[in-house]
Length: 291
Image (cartoon, rainbow, N blue to C red):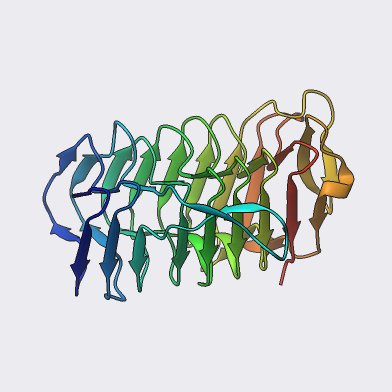
């Protein structure tokens, strides 16, 4: 579905539910152009895929949200996006025993987005492969997650071929009340060429919970491969951070508990130069509460 500028679409339920079928759609399942608006009052995931093998959003993203308006925040003096192209009461993508290939899951550009449930929830043997950053936030956007986790895997696997799980850039902001990532019951996240979280261009990320929380019966794995540190990474409570382009240790605050329930999983760094978090630019900041 494409919502053009000046148009509004409203649904009382989800956008898509598919069971035991194979979907091929190189474009976005939902694309909201600047000035457009999509509203769903459902508390269910906007897209639910049960079984099947799917190639969706392979040219851009499964969800592509763009705005155009900006204003100066009187409290911070920062210029921030003002458009809200998508409003929904649940998460965005849920997969149950499904295989999904995409370019990106979510792209937010010059827009505001709030979520009360995981943006991505993979269950019972699901596998998702994202060619680039799974979640990309740019253009002075603000992404706010009020749920227990921004991304949650349960007995499932997610692969990011190149880029971060979450990339925040261009003066944008990410605020997560809970955990950035939850891995449960033998789940795996493989970052083949990038960090878990990348923040650059005067952006910020504030994580109230953990960077990664392991759960369930254990056997979870977060595998990280990149050479972002060049030499040695800066360590914050054992978390390797790449400080780039003028970023210093003052730009980063990571409390104890950034890895929750470590006995139920492992973090594997492919090389000593692999960073879990990347912070680039003197004005970029990351804070992890570890609650």
